[in-house]
Image (tube, rainbow, N blue to C red; front, top):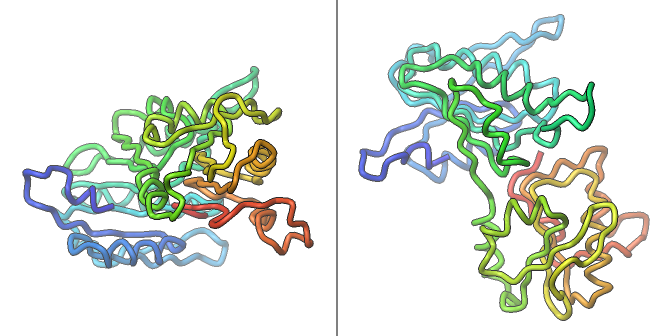
Length: 295
């Protein structure tokens, strides 16, 4: 978020007015507490009796000529419409620039058609966001963390400028703090994760695993090492669990996992806790799932 306020290191640092959705309030307050350049703003998130949103942007006159950002969370279809209503309204208030921070792009895994009739909803959401009105300063800056496929950049139109960020630097910082940092190797659960992240983690040894449906060691030796599985997101956690079993069977001393986005529908995170009906066969050591952003 602070990167928005420091887009040019040679230019004066700019103050940013940060609006946020209800479920991002805690995150927004943490962000503002870590930067003197960010000032929180508020929105009245109300509903009419029929359930449709009744929204009000507080101090709308005061944001004219200011740099404005909105921290969004499209965690379910039920909250997208009300947030889009605000997102479309803010650039029209004569703001100097507008940035949308959408940490998790929820339809990113539906980015292609395998057969006629499939609907690529990643393209649909990208088109919706591409219609955000242009602000006084030009197109909207759209910040997304660890989007599933980098080629989705080309789904967006010219009214938005996608900026794809990553949580990997935070992971690397944490790994270097561990007491067994000299024994850490990185495992990728499939070729997609390897292509997405291996260049960002090239200062660590790696293990590549095979197809998600048939988990096997494709390259590398985990014996005696602390293996950290890295991927962009987790849904049910089945792939992580199968990878852990294979790595442990090949002699890994410890197995941990990092994902940027923990979706975990239907409380599937419980599969990784020791309260899992007494079944301790799923043995992740230390921090079981290291999440940068959860939902």
